Every structure is written in structure tokens, then in C-alpha cells.
Length: 314
Image (cartoon, rainbow, N blue to C red):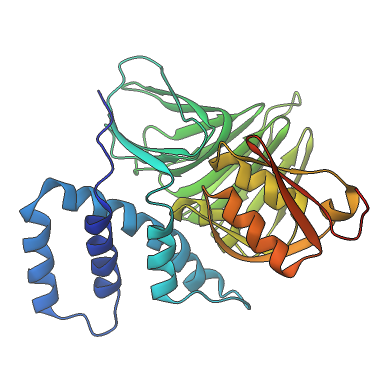
């Protein structure tokens, strides 16, 4: 099935306003009636609302459950964050009904929403490859590389198994992010519970995850912590949140979304730290912003933006 085009920005903005209105403390019956009429007026309204509501749930829901101590995002900031990348990052929607395993990939700057026949939903980030297989007895996904958010429909008879390298995440109905990069796997649980299995050893190691847990696996090494989660799921609203993040790591994230690549040419610049919320997809704007408050010089060479220390002679 061909991807459904992303709704126009004005419809996305209307949907974002509805998300904010329906999550407001003073929501009324009249609001609900008007919302139902708006949804029924155009099929694109439902698609746009799904995009905005998913981003709201990922970030606002985490804030309620984990009570972060710093950098609370207002509703308006969340809405604008969701809208921020709507022009520069392509998104597509697929209805997935596989009789056999099917492979899906995203390019640089592209995201895809997959709606599975069992009711589960998957959001693939940029530069991601995913293989899905649904049968009457099994539900499986293999995250070959990249990052994806899994919103698993409840089914006690068919656990959903997400494989990432030699690791597996097993869920009967929950929501979690999985990132797979080489030997490194990251799992962030934002709703429900899930089990993590390390199959690298003869006796598989099992760890249970609850809301707010982040699991980091690198080869046979596995650990769980509970960091501030908003930066880890900000990609779902096509933004990047950096919280005292090393610049080299921030640039690696930003390069997922743009053909114009950022490149650091000296160790001093790589070790600088950056904080803030940024729209992804415009690396030139990100580089100019960085140069305003960090000792960094920016120059352009073809399709690359070169960052170097302003204290260097190079």
C-alpha cells in the first residue's frame, strides 16, 4: 500500500490546537461535540490528530509519571515542537497487514507511521530498518538498525517480540522506544510493563521494565537507570532536546535528519556541551545557533557545515 501524504501544515496546526484543548483542565462537552464534528469533516483531520496526539502522549505523559525536576515543557511548547519539523521532515503513514515478513526502511529525515492489523502502532525514526511479521500465533518485529516507538495492542495469547541484535523486548501490551546502533541497544518504557531478554549467553537473562526505566545494553553488558526521559523521546515530535549534551553527540543526532552534514574538526569543539530544544532538519540553522553561544566558528564546504574552535588558528 502506498504511503498516505502528510496533511497540510494548517491542518496539523488545527489538530495541535485540538490536542491542547482536549487536554485542558476546563474541557467542556461543547468542546467534545465540536471536536467530533471536526474529525468527521475530513479524513485528513484524523491523520493529523493522530500525529499530534502521539507526540503529546509521549512527552506530556512522561512528565506526569516521572516528575522531571528541570526544564518542564508547557503545552504550547509541546504543540509548537510537534509542528516545528512538519515542513522539513517527511512523514508517511502505512496500514500494515502482512501475511509474511515485510521490510520497511526510512531515509534521512523521513519518519513512517505503521498501523498493524492487530491494533499496534509503530513510529519509525529517520534512518531506520524494520522487519515485521504477524501471524495467527506470533507477533514479531526485528529492528535491524535505527530507532522506533512501539505502541503494542494488548493480546495475552500473542506476546509482541521486538528483536534488536541479540536482545529481545517482550510485551503483551505496552509502549516503548527501542534504539539499535551496532552492538548498542536502548529501551525506554513509557507505558505499561515489558520484559527484556539478553540472548547472547546460553542462559537468557531476563529483566522486567516499568514506566520510566531506560535499559542500556552494549554487548553482554546490561544496565537500567531512570534519567529524564523527555530528550530520549523528543524525536517523536521531530525535535531534539539536549540537556548538557556533548556537542559531538548532539551533532550525531542532528545528522539523522538532514542531507547537510555537520562535521567537527577538532577535539576541543567535540567536547563542548549544548542544551536546548531544536527543530530537526535544518542543520545550517542549528550550526548558526551553536556559534552564537559557544566558542565555535562555522564554515560551509559543499554539503557539509564545518565546526571548529574559534580559539584555534585553523
